[in-house]
Length: 200
Image 1 (tube, one colour):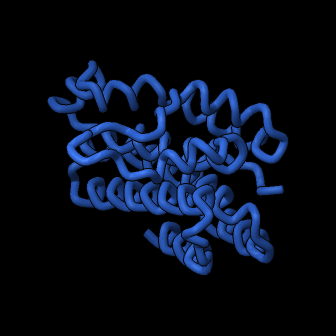
Image 2: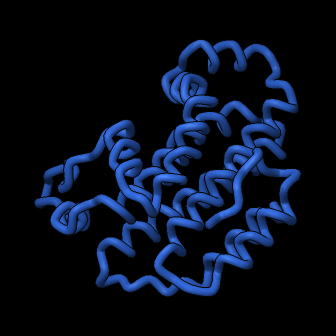
């Protein structure tokens, strides 16, 4: 929880321009990702880890979408996203993007090419399990009957913390004066993170 508090403090100084649909979208997705990370921590500390695993995929997708919005999303898509739907019509006003499409788009942009490598590494390590827990697959069924080993639960939190780092980097990218604090957090909390390169 100390790590999450440090990340929240790092990001809380950002004043989002609500007229800027790109910054508004990134801020809202970043906030949602931090809430999911907190939910995972609370569930695991309450000895209820299975639903914590069901939050891994939405958190991953929120972080990916925030990065995608930073470097790729078109202005008209962002405008449509925030356009209220017609009365009595329940549908998205902007077409949703597939995860693989967003990852491919992120890879094409130099500012986020390094982030893309980390996202793919996380996805390769956890992708099958994160889908299984969301859709009631074999991982979810087995771990509903058999206790999830503590080291595996700790790895979930480490991966969640890694996503929080990428999440903060995405939110703060246009701003100045945050990189030293970011590196200090990485250094101080190495024991609750997977191996991660310093931000450049």
